[in-house]
Image (cartoon, rainbow, N blue to C red):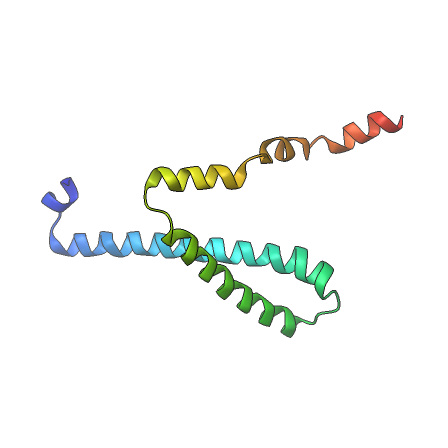
Length: 114
């Protein structure tokens, strides 16, 4: 409310553009991050190990588009902020132990071997 009441029109526009730029930066980061994981860890490793760069770029572009469509479908189903947080918690459920133990797995395996 304070920004709407006290900022002149030019700064309101600049603030809007800054918010949109931050939003687009977040979207592009998440899409690139998700696509790189899927292409490098799944497609290149298991599905098409001998893929050349042109095929990987084509698959990356298709996967980015597919991730965008899935994200639009998922976000269209979210009606409240609470449901968005519940969805994020459900997506990450069970990962805590894995994310912590990844730093200690070699110590655990070493203790069983020796």
